[in-house]
Length: 313
Image (tube, rainbow, N blue to C red; front, side, top):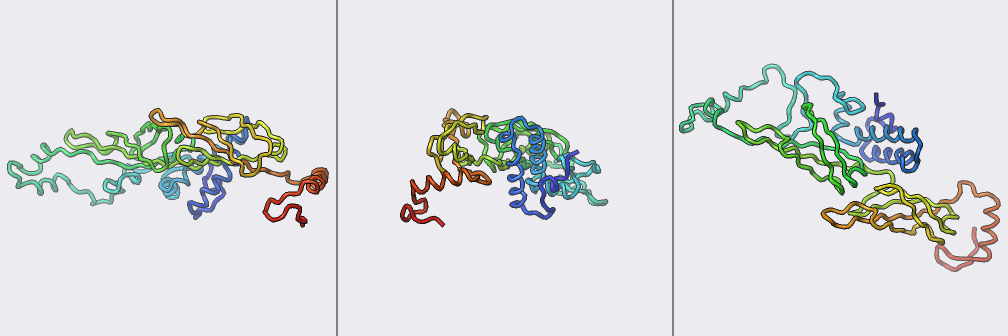
């Protein structure tokens, strides 16, 4: 059984969306499988964090979880026959009915059309009136990599039906997928409406997207930056080897051509841009300090402008 998502992400039950998103990114980055290859414990922890964010990062799911309608895994809890249809479009939203609340729609339509020429009342109307089914709206949260690379995900609707939703490569946050014929049924053999699925792309702990390009920061050591190195780098399609040129610095941007978002309709894929961040040791030892003192005295430079060789504090 899945753990309480608030506990997994370490946030309070009244945390806002920004706090939840920040907690997810911080935790997911620390145990992402791309950064911990082969670490089963980190992989399991990452799955738990992603599952928790799947609930709390989705406003509708979070509200349903808080009301006790779904459990921590997102599964429906047993309820009575009349169930809240919270995911439906406003015009077609179902709700729990109270005794005496039911209305005979046949009587209403009979009164409305009793005087139509040749209508003959409600029974004749019911036999002849055809109306197309209405559309239903749904919200689907997908992983960043699924949105970039494409995937198929099974969605359980509030009425218990399941749909296989095909996520096309390159899908962007907020796009709406139309599933024809999966909405409300039509009357007297008329076609059913459609299911309109609005997609929310979850943030990724490492990658960000700008159009068709992918961006990420990469930490490198002082020797790797000064001397150059070949190091593994995650991309949206798998790990590749990146050549860090000698003399690189914090802010140096390297491009991995064609490693961005796949192109649509024959277009070229985007690129991945890697921004280097030079990271010093947590506690530089005396040997490094002595070397830098000697080197600095012989090779003064002005990283903040001004005159080279100004006395250091």
